[in-house]
Image (cartoon, rainbow, N blue to C red; front, side, top):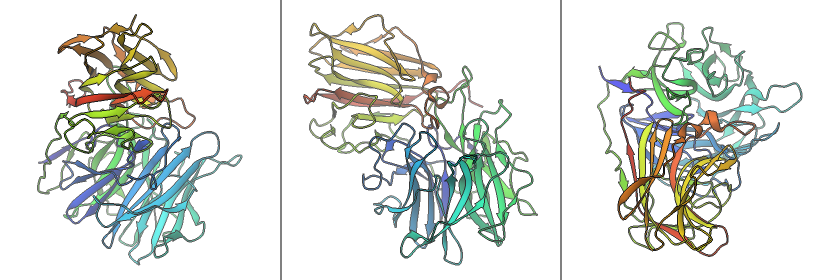
Length: 534
């Protein structure tokens, strides 16, 4: 029997939306403040997945300058109808207080890997929008509705609104069709139709350890909806021994052979400190329909499995991404992203010095506006990242180096700068929950006329930085707590922290003198996971 090992999308890939088009499967996941927006992975067997596109690649589609940490793109929904791919997404711009500034948009494409359309504004009623294509040709938007009124729950239920597909606009303000169960925090809606019944799938219980999947059904799309008597149909709640925690926020798909699978959000705590240092990931479970028309996990419980029976489909293995990027291409590798905005030739260049990535100094790492940071997800509990940098700072306000990053309030930065005596020095900043400290007793002097190798080695909760001059590596002498770069440790906003750990390259020049840093390569190596492997 072929099996699937969870998670199928490792490291910060939450809120999955799945579709099948012929023999091809696609999953869209949230990207929050990272640009370009929305990750789309492709598979033919539900076992092997490849990142193929980020459709929101223009500022006209995704304007995130100044948005808060963990704002941006929340819970996109991917669908397909009559040769057209539809992508619905939210831009969360304000997460403070009672009021949410969240705007929902629609883009389309005939080729999922190609250019996507300019966005069509839909509403600002709430987040997690989803589009359902009925078999009579009508199209319906569902989203959670935010209710800030006195005495009302913020999560005010699921609103249904018809979409005028020809004119691409909503018809009126719609109707709240489901107010949720006693679990509360009702969000993440998807509608499917089976045997003439409409099934409303929602996420409830909050996106942490109480997360759940619940289902209701109706003969009419606008209700009333009958709640599944065995809800929740999926959860890790109350079982801390499960390797997959936070199970919830799902979508389902039928294979070409008639099997059904559920993709869902999950998190894997590390054994030592219980924090999910890789963020919220995407897992999959086999499901089936009972004789009385309810959806159940194939394992006979409502708990997620780490190992799942795979469908009888021809295996399709994609080429493994190279560990080392020598920056020989004229565009960044697809695994890299930037913060809140695209970086132009005014910020980075792969052509000004061929075979090198040039990053031009911009604002501090705590900025929500114009950073020059290029980073990729941490996707393994144990990994190392290495680079070689040439950088000639002129003062202490010039910095460049290697950063382990969660958000503007949480990062570890191994950087080069210049001290007051004109010496090039290497130092570390630990910036956790908006508190700054310097773990080294003093900065390390390095030759002014030479480049420097920079390395980060991560093993579960431990982070060790090293540096090299003339090819000889030296550890910096301190062990940092990598588990602090996690949702659980970084939650300082009123709404929450929802992303994951990144590792990247950056440069700062806050006096505008045109300083830049050149990086020769970026090497990301994953190591065997001994503690959490089953």
